[in-house]
Image (cartoon, rainbow, N blue to C red):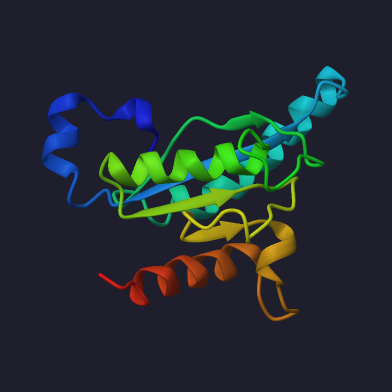
Length: 150
């Protein structure tokens, strides 16, 4: 479910059920041509369907974090990953129990993203021959929910 599909009244009513937020990370840079940016967005859209469709009614997809400097220093206060991690903390303060970072293009660093409950990228999910990405992502999300400390 997209964030823009939820009214104020619905949020109050559905908040206990909509406990998971996804932050899509596009990974765009200013060096991309328009057709390359389009391809990146389409690939991310396809990945997002792996969580939006099967978990509709529990997951809310927030606006994408588009422009990323993958060479950004992980440790600096204003570093790219520090800002993204701070965003996850703010979303939890706003009422989400779980926050997932998802990217189809960028290998997101796990260590500096400590406020995220799950990081999903093609590099992180390690699909075996017997699996497909939809199946593996579903398993990882369900494992996150079942292994919760809550």
